[in-house]
Amino acid sequence: MDHPVFTRLREEMAKDGLDALVAHTLDNVTYTAGFQVPTHAMNRFRRTISILAGRDFARQIVVNVEENLARERSRFSDIVSYNQFTQNPSDIVADALTEAGVASGRIAIELDFIPAMDFMRLQEKLPDATFVHARDLYFRTRMVKTDDEIAALKAVGELTESVMGDVIDGLKVGRSENDVGAEIQNRMLAAGSGVAYQVGSGARSGIINCKPTPKEIEAGDVVRIEILGDMDGYRSNVTRTMVMGKPTEEQEEIWSVLIAARDRCEAMLRPGTTVPDLWGAYRDHCRTEGLEPSLTFLGHGIGRTIHEEPYLTETRDLPLQENMTHTMEPLYMIPGRMGFHVEDMYRITGEGHEKITGLKVSNDKLIEVSA
Image (cartoon, rainbow, N blue to C red; front, top):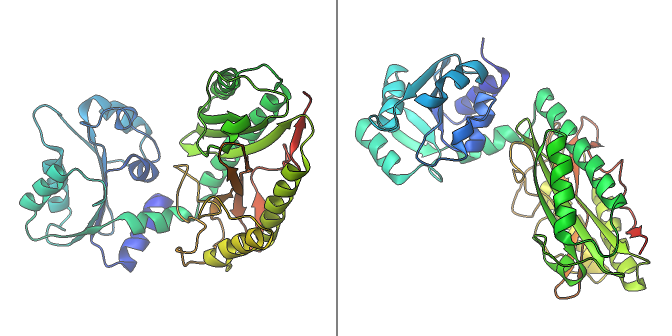
């Protein structure tokens, strides 16, 4: 019996009139196979490929040094390995598609990713095939999460927010951004999660992607911390904004606009709300209050990768659906002065929404840290 992920992908293949679906990217192969081949992320010369074809053909192709692990961990029961020095993985793909009886069929492949040499080889080996892009099919399928995926997202989200609380508790004037970043990394790794992070203080808080520096945190600084976890193949994205001491009237006014806009959008989180309407509500509230959003999207889907569909922006004309997971991240930057940003994770439920994060470490008001 097919795994539920295989079933969902085959259903989407049927809707698009496809005979086969081939994935090469780290996130789509990992989503399909249920585990990440270690060197897939580290060695661009080693291909890891998943293939679904027809009603029941399912095969994963891996480099031979990863074969034993793939047999142990992958949800594919059919694993074929190749020697990276003597075999061309595109030949292995072509042979699999021929074996599946779809050599002259409509084959979806990641045309926005597959190396040109690999694709040219496939065209040579399968001259009667019609190749179309697989991007939208995977986006569409991955937007709606399974119960297991939701559980994984909750686990990494809750951990990330807990670490955020601990890190905020340890903030003090004189600590460097690098020191704060090291604490984030140590706490997340100790809890079993990979991690990326941003730390920006003072004027540096006004840089959207503020990698930490040796700068020391000073009294009166706005401090932005973003933590991005990676546990069991699923991601988290949590951001909080603090002030070292009492916030100024200007800072409180900016924050109140962002939070009111967020709250307005939270009230709209339910199946059927369209993404452009959600973005429009956020944008319009900010503009009415005199702020121009610093990003052209309100948030993004989250799952196997930090940024997935749907991006919450006017160009994504689709409705929210039950079990979509996404972030919302009101953000306003004043370059050279300061920046404001709160980000939390959400799940769309049958009748509304559930907060995955945002319950342990509230940022409804600017967090005041004793200076």
